Image (cartoon, rainbow, N blue to C red):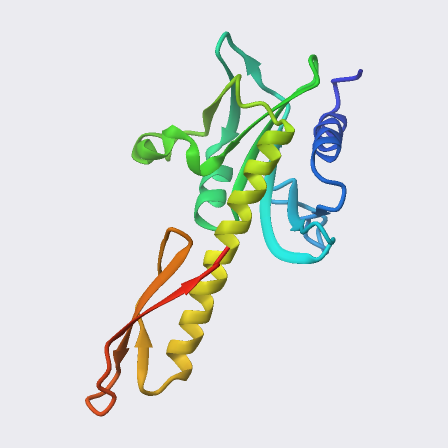
Length: 209
């Protein structure tokens, strides 16, 4: 298997994703339509449900093949420019996919789970950082189910927050406080915007997933 061309490496990594993700998940190119370039994202994946209906729930993929395999983890280099862009600009969950060409194994982690995030002041002036993924974090069918559940839940919460924000803009009398998600319920308080709209009712909404 040739390894001297980065384009080939990325293709192998992408093929590995297509082989493990459900066939109806949509791979969307993040490339700019004018320049053809992509910024730190190899794919945007939209999850379709069991009836192949579009859900709107998406996550981003950053493929990495230039990894180092250690005894207990793999180490993946990532430019700080990309890291800052993915953290500060991309609102979708970002999945780091480390693909080992030699063994045909895929490792994964959410960028938000990287333990180095707490040391931003330390690495923000560096050119690169190293993201470590435990070897047990293999991209398996069980992991795919975990990915699906997290992305759908996050999308559902984001949708509910958007609905609350819209209601607050349109309703001249009442305002909903930011929703709190607990035990598959959504809690919020209705507050009056002016003295004539005196009401303070705790509302909840079930089945937000």
